[in-house]
Length: 233
Image (cartoon, rainbow, N blue to C red; front, top):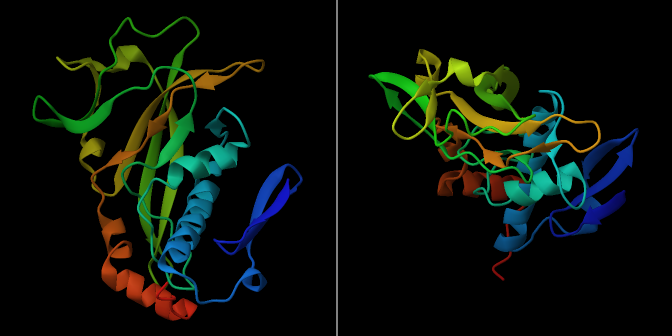
């Protein structure tokens, strides 16, 4: 698959089974409208998140198109993250998609159970269908390098229903880690099959608010200055 997203100023191609994105400065002038600039910022941040998510292992986005195109479609619903031309941040923020599939989605929120931090879901103990398992996506926001650039790392953990606690809302994962404001979580239903793998559609829930520095008016102004400004229309 080869092509370009002119409004975003990127080209993409497939090499060795991997989708590679590159900035295409020749596709359009640096000055663009606010709408075009927001598309560019969403594309840039989505590509960074995708790279980090793939590092966690197998990706789970099932439907028409490529796994990346499915992820990108969902990630574009997030607020644009404004970074300067030389920055490549990946920000932990509520709503990051980690999976997409036809299994029933799990509603989940960060709360407390018996005064302890918890990830509370609407999942019932006997609700899992035969062949289904649970995978917990854990996102960790870090600040790296001399410039303290934000990076969002992902890992996955297998979860047993017997390790969860029953609440009035549904089953919950309880522990001090769910009070960590630099982490996020998403519990995903999985059917691991070589013939027809499936999953539920899930997004990250988190208390982390570092991303707000990159969605502010000040971040927008710094970003457009580094890219040469935007057009009025």
